[in-house]
Length: 167
Image (tube, rainbow, N blue to C red; front, side, top):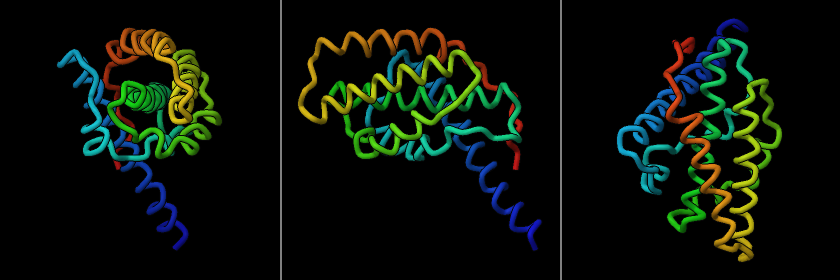
């Protein structure tokens, strides 16, 4: 009985992570193919998973897949924040406290994921400022630099990792 319970629990987790990895592939592919950032419609209708809840270590993932998952989730969160800062949606602020906590407690040995964590933390602070009405458009330069770095070093460099997530 315990074995069935554990398989049910971890099997569902593996399926969910596999689905998130497919979302990340689609997200990266869309940006690469179309040369533009997704708009709020995608974040409201396609990317509806609370990705921030999956920012933790999975012992059953190999390193490449774990790094792909971490970078992908953080990239999606950054682009959600960017959409909000551009006045194109508010999904990020509806869950701002929860997202901030998950990003804050995220740990990785991957240098790019750590840098992206810092970038997302900064973007979340900007979103919080905007939400409180103390946002200055001059601070948009920070987010544009962050988006450029992420596109150049994460999104356009990503190769779909060999999946170790088959249920």
